[in-house]
Every structure is written in C-alpha cells, then in structure tokens.
Amino acid sequence: LPTIGVLALQGDVREHARALEAGGARTLAVRRPEELERVHGLVIPGGESTTMWRLARTFDMLEPLRKHLGAGLPAYGSCAGMILLADRIIDGAQGQETVGGIDMVVRRNAFGRQVDSFESDISLPELGDPPYHAVFIRAPWVESVGAGVRVLGRAEGGGGAGRIVAVRQGRLMATAFHPELTGDFRVHRYFVDLVRRAMEED
Ligand code: GLN
Image (cartoon, rainbow, N blue to C red; front, side, top):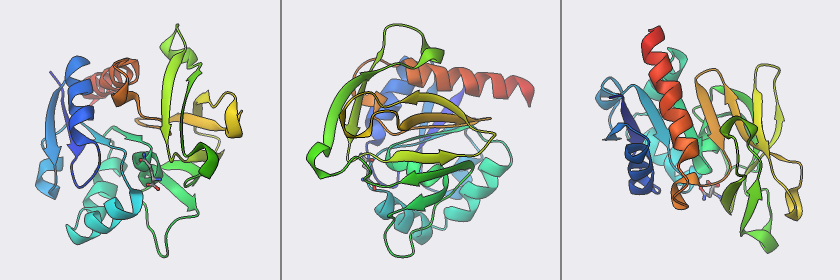
C-alpha cells in the first residue's frame, strides 16, 4: 500500500486521512521534514493558506516541501492546499508565499462574499459519471494556467461559471473544492492511483 502524508500544520487533516484510507492508502500526519521522507505522496488540506504558510515557515517546512515536490513527490492540494501549490497568487496576505509547483495563478477568496460557501455539481470528465458534488468554502479559483497544466474541471453556475477549479500538472493536482467532505472519494482515489503509478515509475 502507498503511504500518503497529510500536511498536518492546520486544516481538515482527519477528513483527508479518512478519504485516502477509503481510497486504498495508508496515511501519515506530516509536520516535520523527516516525515516527508517516509511518504509516497502528500495531501495539503483545506484550511487557511496564510496560517499554513506561516506555520510551514515556523516549522522550517517550506524549503523541504519545495525540494520534495521538485524531486517528484506527488501532491494534491484542496482549497487552501491549492493556493499553497500555486506558483503565483492574487489577493494573498501581505508577503504570503507558496510552496509552488503548479504553473498557475490562483485568486484567493475568489468566489466573493455573497457566495462565501456553496455547493454545486460539476463535471470532472477524468472521474467519469455522475457529476461531482463539489463543496466550495471561501474558495479560490484558478485565474490562468501555463501550457503544461491540464484543466480537470470548471465551476458551473454561480458567480464563477467557467472558472477553472481542478487542475493537474504531472504528479501535482489541486481542487478549489473539498472532496473530503462529501463521501464521494473519486478525487482521492484518482490521487491514490497517481501515487501508485509514480511508485512504479521510480
Ligand atoms: N480562503 C482560504 C484561504 O485563503 C481557503 C479556504 C479553504 O481552504 N476552505 O486559504
């Protein structure tokens, strides 16, 4: 079984661990650089990207995260985790840094106040039918992507129709929504498969 870490500095760590275990992985809460050596993949959960960034800096995790992702460690970021995986962000806090890795610009809190949180069914063709019930909580969207980034899904209806909300670039993927909250673990299974394939390649 692959061991998949969940970055456990802040955010909904437990929900992701449960979803990954349902998807066929072992999990490990990751707080220290050494723990990155013990996982075949990493989930960066939702929460608050500014807090996660500050804690990652305090715990000296920013550079180790960059190093491991750069060396091919698969990673999946949800919501705040998507922000952490973006090479560039808009509307970040003063000085807010990311880990980066996905060639995209992500707008923080993009969906705006009147739709701070909403749910909507979106189509994610790579995950098949039925459409995915996506939960957005003060979610970002992807403003633009580079040529190497595959768009997996876009928002439908609401204030952000057509905006990119799910992407993949090589072994890195990100969603603006929270698939760990609904019991439909196709996104986590997709990531576990990605991790399995990466283990075979390495
Ligand atoms: N708005 C949060 C941020 O900027 C993300 C919200 C979430 O992860 N649910 O990090």
